[in-house]
Image (tube, rainbow, N blue to C red; front, side):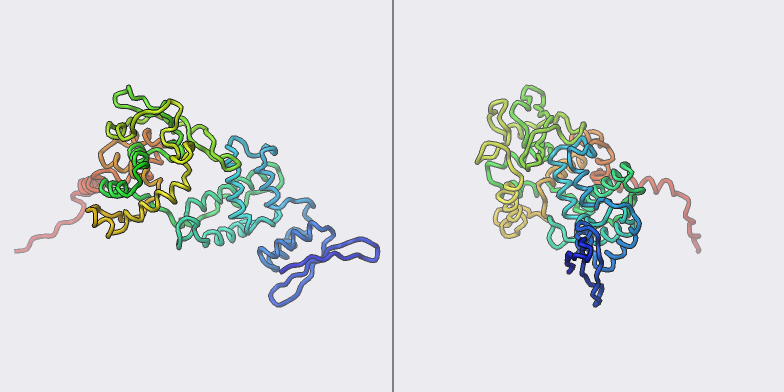
Length: 398
């Protein structure tokens, strides 16, 4: 523990003494200003006395008033600073939450010019050892780690552009692959099992998600007026999605990217499952309780998880003659499932890209390319033809 004590000198001036320990040794460092003393004490609490003193020694002679990473992060995320533009308020707030739960935990009290690549590496090692907040018993996912690191790197890059520091210590930091949540691709029978255990009033919603591949924010923003029943086949226009505002409340905005604005064809049985059309401005899938936006958290806890638990229980499934789920899916996995069905049926990947609203074909290939029908057989045949005659043949002896 570090403590800060003000001391009045004979001249009447005040200095601040920080008491802390390095191993078993009691240490004291004096500061001419209160802010510097408390910043040092906070650094001791985060990284230990020895590391904190090394940071102070490294900054000897450095200009006064150097902001800490926490100070500059607040400035960077402040809309009035003009340093971060072109993002939604909810996204900006999300960056702040990610910063607080990740790199600010370790590096927040470091002055910007004291952060080295080794310091960033120590944070990475600490962060990758943290438990996932979503998947119990597993480490943080590789995607989450990349998201945290990208925010840190953007903040340090901004400080470089403002000529506060000379280099970005987070640039090209190597990250381990970490734990990756593999998409769960349900078979038709598995989806039928899940649908059976879903409350009747939500069956049409699950059919829509699995039958169109829409994202949650897109599907829950659709109104009856977005569906063209006169088209052959009927179509739905995706041109808006729910996004988080800074307050946490949902707001209607444009979809995720330019390619996410798209038209999706519907199949007759799905149109029939939607029921009689409502007013053109009414939501297609409102909350049954409020008639407004359907919240993902409540749906997951009250509807999705109970249905998944029963769909994975062999006893429940045996009783109704259904195949239990082999893996635990998320709601987003219905999007993966939709794409996997398209690919398995032979749909060209550019068609899948357009229907899913992927910004780049590389995303489609990276996530679903391995599902191409007969892909392994085709590759084997190609190599067999290419390598024909290369291997020596054994001589036949009498």
